[in-house]
Length: 79
Image 1 (tube, rainbow, N blue to C red):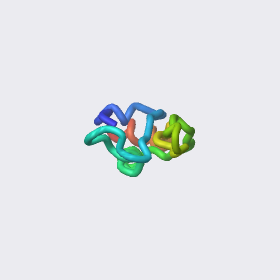
Image 2 (tube, rainbow, N blue to C red; image 1 turned 90 degrees about the vertical axis):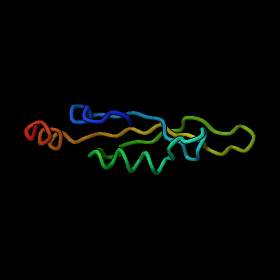
Image 3 (cartoon, rainbow, N blue to C red; image 1 turned 180 degrees about the vertical axis):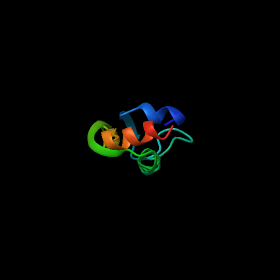
C-alpha cells in the first residue's frame, strides 16, 4: 500500500492479500488489512484469488476497501 498521501483522494482500494507469505518480505493478510484500515478504509468484500492446487489451501484473496463519503469529505476540508 505505497499510496502515501494520495490515499486522501482515493475512495476505493482493490488489492490482493496473501494469507501466508508467498515472497520474501511480502506483507501478510493481517499486516495489509491493518495498514489499509489505519488509513481510514473499511473492508466491504473479500473474494478468492488463488489456492494451492494440491492441497486446496487458499493462498490469496482480493480485498475491496472503501472510505466513507463523510470521512473523505472531512479529509478534503482538513487539507
